[in-house]
Image 1 (spheres, rainbow, N blue to C red):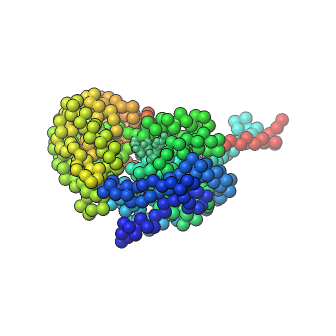
Image 2: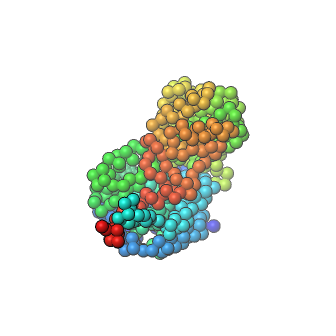
Image 3: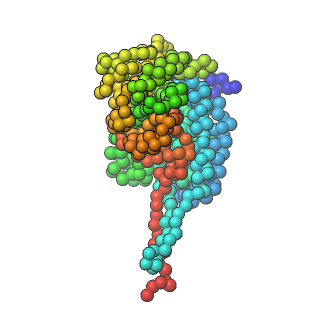
Length: 490
Ligand code: NAP
């Protein structure tokens, strides 16, 4: 088992541009901090605007030769990367735990999930297909081919530092695109370890360029306005995503946006309550609540609200907050002080709005940015906490009287990423699948994310899908070739 200091000594801390590790052009670095101890873990090269340009230059230079590689060649590189990440699973897990905070068991889960995108898209690369048809009047042959969109810019968040990167890089490699990745400043180490894996897997120079920076807007802004860039894929907050969509209009970029959520978790009167409690714990507490798919509002039928709340609160009370490397830890710290303080202010606001604290309700003393698992009951309609993404271990519970009200409450948000519903009534489950404004729906399931399924939202939760057979389409253009059939000319 590698120790933390041995591991940190092996993780690259430079920029990766055109197949070479290097310092920032002005020699600057920024600190990466452990959110459980508030100690500095590493100093990482801090890309400048010039470094961003160099990264796009490299992606543009590599573009044509990479587009000409065979699907099988791209597939094998992805397969090797899958195997290397799997072999080095413990290194990835420990890196995520110390830079982001989640318990090791959760980090191991993310390694398996994140690696699976590499395997899934290694299998999709040789399956990119087109179409051949005869025009209705018989005079033309119609050939439809799929082409890589071209150089991409990826901007990823800190909450799933491995999976949010592989979910973009893997389909882009499979499709034949080159790319520049700007990982979150809070968690660049996982992305740098992944870059090392791609280098070992034989990815040619210039295909993947990685530029950690503490000046996200200044470095990526000029790239988004550069005519050589053809695609922007962003995972992060709706606020930043909205701004990036506006900036992308200049070059009419293809955009994929995986943005914020405000997931309703519906428990109907006919639900299997122990199963609903299990699902609620998974949907709320995975990643300490720091997930875009985290259940944000529990909406429970009034006849089962007490039974559900009692059992759910007991399970929430059993969580053990500690640094994620501690074997007993079941919830780590929040990623930084700002995230913890935002959670505290949402809870305080909910109490002012009339909610009652059934469990928790406060930050824990430091060092580390810990917040207690919290259950809020009697949360009134219109309370501010029901409108905002909490991004922490806080569960507000409200009640409903009938299905129509449940659907109205669930849809009363500008977000539409995922919804969860527990019911044993098949007709009702199918009605919900039709009536909820959501990109994804879990029926009697608290976790829906799967590399083989299309992940994404509607409304202000985003545009496009990642994963599944749909995921590669985000990196492909459709080109139509009309071919005259001389034998049919009259
Ligand atoms: P964020 O503040 O929007 O940051 C996300 C990424 O954007 C980071 O790399 C950040 O860089 C960068 N960024 C910030 N401002 C930018 C700008 N002006 N121009 C270009 N890049 C900029 O979000 P976050 O706090 O890291 O992540 C939490 C959010 O992500 C939540 O809303 C969550 O729901 C969402 N999320 C969505 C999904 C999904 O699939 N739908 C998945 C995970 C997370 P810095 O690190 O330097 O700030």
